Length: 143
Image (cartoon, rainbow, N blue to C red):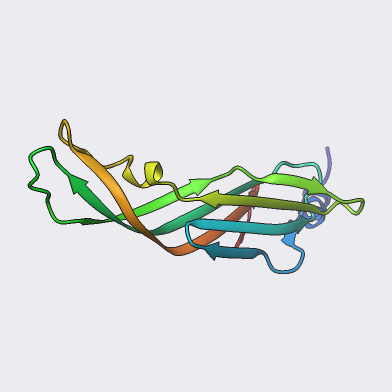
C-alpha cells in the first residue's frame, strides 16, 4: 500500500501535465448572421475535450395570418449552441479548432407557436454575444 503523500504527489503531477490552455487568444468574429471561431488548445494529453459555442441575440419576426389582420412584429430572443468543430493537430500536440455557425430563420422561428395557416418571417437578426467554452474534466476555458 502506497503512503498517502506519495499518492497525492502522483495525482498532482497528473493534473499539472494535462492542464489545457489556449495558445494565443481565440478568435470569435461576427459578420451578419454568421459567427466564425478559431482557437488552439495545448496540454490536452490523452483525454477528450468538449467545445461549445453559444450565440445569443434577438430577431425581428413578422407574423402573417390568413385573415389579413397581421399582429405587430415580435422581437424574439434566441440562445443557440453548437459543438460542431473541425479539429486539426500539429506535430507539437496543439489542436486547432474551427467552426462557422450561421443563425438561420428556422433556428429563430422553431420555438414560435403559430396558429393553423399563420406564418412567421424573420426580417432581421442581431447577434448580441458569442461565447466559447472548452472543457476537459474539471478544467474549463472560456472566451
